[in-house]
Length: 497
Ligand code: NAD
Image (cartoon, rainbow, N blue to C red; front, side):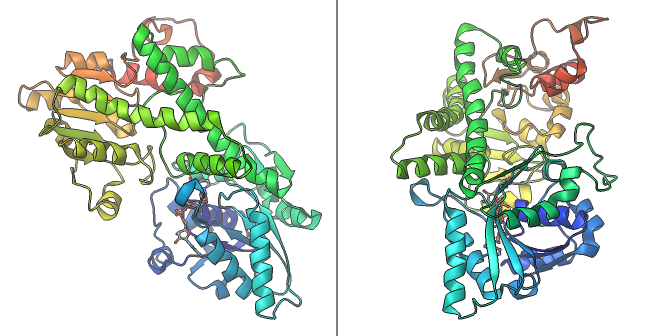
């Protein structure tokens, strides 16, 4: 099929490359000429694992342009994947969506076209886009012969595994008011739903991904599904963070608590990793938008509101711990390991590191930082923030009074803490682990003052896997899904050193 994608950000470009890989002819449009120029040179405008490989594999079916006129008229399906950043009062700013809807109306082709809202948009946006397109067509007296319908197809990809999530999704949600619209989108997604496409060599199909459930529903339900999913994930993280505060007070190990509750299938192990809390472009914005939508209908959302408050406090907890241990922050150098809001992305939107840097600078501290991929982007987007970026994590550690592990990049698990300590002055550097990713006992032995945001070194206690020659084996499946598997991993590979 012929497809146009409006917006080549994380969602638009990933969707475009995946649909082109499935065999559709895809034209990606962005209003940012520098992004399109980079894409035309074969460069990805942001860091996302396997994106370049997929773009390469799909290149015969994929083109890039700044002109709606080169993409929209021939398209049977037009995806809107533009940004919907938070606006005033928590409601998303829909200017980019409005621009896209008007641009579509100017260039709509003669056949039946399905316009798909892939951007995360508040309830009612499907109807709003439809009204905008109709209004624009009427103004131009060009409505005759143009037939279209608007659908909602929310996106659930996670940055850092966006290509995997798009090729092997756990569900596809489509909201539409007409059967014809559904049929077009079913046809578009058929290879994905059946998993009948040839798996790329660089990203083999997981065993579980045999066929993908399709949830076909009305527009409003599809729109709510996206917000409700993100708010739920956000509150799950805030829940375990709230419990971690109590665990710290009573001397309990939150990693064990999380595992102990997460293995109950009704709860599930995902998103139960206590730490600095959530960041990124979605959870904050979408939870706020959900609250704003509810208030338009006279409802408050006490649970979602509390999840946001717990998340805010979690970041303050880092500063409180540094203050308690260093006593004075003025003039101290605090090192941040990790700037991106999570590993495997260079996205800095609502990243905890930015918030922390601001809070620390406001208290008179000097801030230095490292990130394996987000440093250039940080220099470009946060030139006004007085953070000195260092080329290696070791440089950050050896020049800091306290180091905070903010983002649990795999590279940071390889840091030779002992060697850094041996090479430096004999001062006792505070290391605050914000992600339960470091073996505290090892750091203490190496001469650091180890602190965990959750109170205890998570790598403690009896672990048959680690401590026995022939353990009573925990079934592999539950171990892999277990949120504390990372802790076990770090115990074996770091702690053994
Ligand atoms: P993004 O900011 O990375 O990309 C948006 C792109 O749209 C930019 O390149 C911008 O130049 C372009 N754009 C803006 N107005 C345009 C117009 N009128 N025509 C053509 N291009 C235009 O955003 P993103 O992270 O890809 O998110 C897009 C949407 O998807 C948002 O609503 C977001 O909430 C949602 N979403 C994002 C994620 C994620 O992980 N990033 C996941 C699921 C859903």
